[in-house]
Length: 277
Ligand code: ACM
Image (cartoon, rainbow, N blue to C red):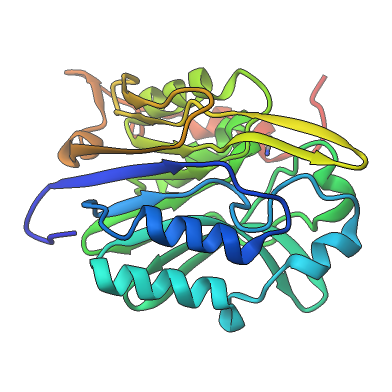
């Protein structure tokens, strides 16, 4: 990312990971992105292990510590060669815990780790819920917020990241429901941010069942308009050049700013756990 320029090329790589084949999946990503002309590329959720685990033991067997991971080393080496940044889903283990994480990687190594806060369905049986605060990380003058898949259903996540100054939400996903693309367009509109949702396609066909993933990765502008949307079941590297200054302008009318006009004193219910009804 060129510091002086407000223009940058953001991208998703939509593909079909094969369950449990970490090395094959890594090689697939490294070769698909070897010539990519982009500044920031987002990969799907859990793109190296696959998604549909049988149990926690299976997650523990495939999870890696980012500080000692061949997968991370390979991706960081790619970032150095291409001088770009990657956001990738990652099956993370740390101190006997396993997280469905996202990593921001660049030529300097691991720049930021986010652990999925809102676990989806059976993930609750085998992952630990995220335990790190929502923070924004700046690389080369660009403020990046990370969220993972089902976090789309909790508007607080995008909102908190936007309040912290995020300009681009990077959103690795393994979607099985049909609502996320519309919801993320609204997250962009209501926070005036860009979002890259990188989904996978194909199936995890396992002995305990099958999940089909829905593709349609997308890049959305602060206006809520989809700048690029992938096919449902096709491998695709989608790259769009954006003008980042669009995400720095929070006005929605001449007299309204979607961040400054908030009335937090009236939102205190949001801080209480459990239902308010
Ligand atoms: C999901 O959170 N992977 C649906």
